[in-house]
Length: 293
Image 1 (cartoon, rainbow, N blue to C red):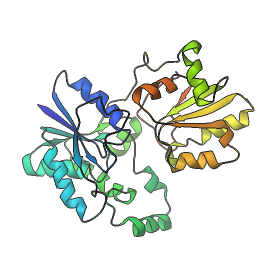
Image 2: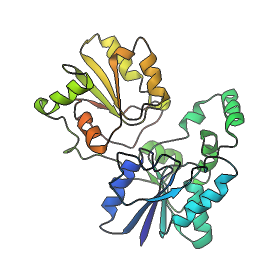
Image 3: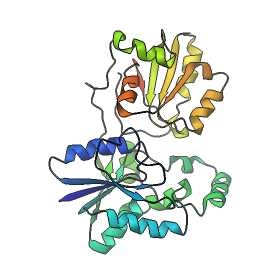
Image 4: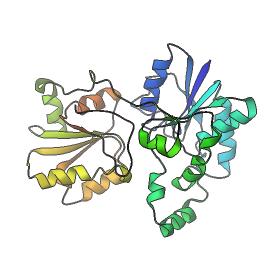
């Protein structure tokens, strides 16, 4: 039996946990990881971690090119079981094409509720978003449509009880190797702290993509209110518009250090700087289990 993981973007950080799971399953199955390249290539942190099937789809984000490029994506999937990762416009709909055309089994893998942001918008906000993005099938406004396709799938992997209650399926918790991700001795971190400008500071570390529904701002707010002058909140991940908002906040910016992403090795080294490692959630639970490092 062959398993095909389908990610929504080979540049996405979700490629990391998918790669780990795919490599684990290789001992029992033939496994491939397939995903579209929207123009940015394979995520630099995982570029050498697996032999990915990369499908050029630089215009899949818009109509009408979406239809031809999702067919190209479907043609690259050769597994008996298709595992679309996340309920977005170029994962589950593509997998269901193969269910109809050749009887492939479809088992979505949900690591979080990607539709949370759209669900939290007010009705006027949703209308404005639709008017702006009606021609963009990968945007948030199409997530509810994709979620309604989940019952057409053969089974479902949910990574938390929250996701199971909302969408059903079987819970397969995500986790990390706690022997690898653990605080490093001070003598091993001294040079890295100096390089990042946080020498002599105590650190709380967040690793991942900052998005509004994760409630990340709660941590620097707490740090600011604590009055502990040598405490810093370190973000290891893409410096997107939400990170820039934190850095632009005059009350919080002095407590936030955004280091971006470089490679699996360097990111892991930075994660090991922290004593607590935060995985926040506002409104729903995540399936990732990191523990206190």
